[in-house]
Image (tube, rainbow, N blue to C red):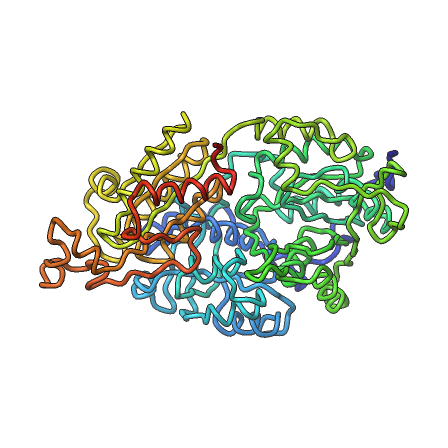
Length: 585
């Protein structure tokens, strides 16, 4: 396979010769240094919101101008117009609602016209929001319109319906300072900085490539051919904010991208990172990605098969058709400005020893491919990865990150009423696990956690959430290091369980087990008399009596804690773990 040189680097070009930002003006929202310092001091006296990772990504791209023409989080009129029509209220094309969600409790402390300091998780002030609108979005309607589904198997839908707060604050932003990143700082360009680099290096035709996965030979061939097709330089701009749960971590991916760059002709490709929180929204997301790349100065944008697709729905069908994204972008091509480069998948024909577009495959071609699942199997087994699939430098990085035979961490999360048998079944599972493996197992029992990790918390809705989230965080750290976490809280609320699932699945597998024991059985087992005290009104906020228990919709396993001995139920759970490949033997 040979390299074909792209257009040689030319002299500098005028900055204004690059494609105009979306809406005509790059909306950089940071204040001048002296004003920013004054606002930083002023923000200490303001009510504040500590942003979550998704909100931090959105804020960073708002402040830098990557979300031009937005100058803040959407108010209600813009929000409703975007959801319904893919446009801001003034008619400007914009497909994705960018909202700042807060709880009812936080919203009750804020009025329209107020200023709110937006901070990172360490309390560092990043911006001040001038609140112009406080409203309650219809999240189900938003899910249906934006994602085309309310199926929670869609990660964007799950995030929206299970982890997004009910109230939205809209208003203009004034930027104090960008979020701090300690990794790959030389690759984290703002739109202004990247546009300046393009101009200084004589790049005026730039084709951008979006990715959230490691790149292999097929990706190199696709991007090379797309750049050659339109006579452009190549911008490889991977997402390093939030992607699909279970994706390869961005540290590993960026190392892979760096290793891949020498495989391109000299001065033909640039790597730059995008701190975007993806929604996996298919066609709408592709349109959003194109607008963002336009703001960074790209004149062209590669849109492949099933761009930003999240996989299959509950019935096993893809959420989006393979060419839905290309069709939506083509429909808006004229007003979008950035040129769309639709490109088929590249496949390897062994009989030709070359990659070719899938549309060029003939009946006589011996087409080969390695799926993501197969690649993970090769890495786990330490088996050979064919040279036609990837580059040795990339494979070495992936093998270092995923050493052969390494056990993947997982969390068993038991949920159910008090007295359902969660802890007893969990102890039986632990015993049977330790009979078969020497892997580290850590128990996060509800009572023990409250004694140590959550000392001082009560049983209000907020305190229950804090307790379960703490369990999830500790479990995610255990899983991240290849361990097994056994959790057995009541965890009565679905959104809290979803939060824990998201924390754990960022590093390994989450197995939810609903111990669905009838409340009458739970009360009969109650040696401490808690249910009786709750029914007498002596204990407030008691799950199943005075507080609700939201039954899990789709746990990995549902067992009746009164149906069999704990050892028998534990064997069912271990069988599930074997069938899913989480344990051997």
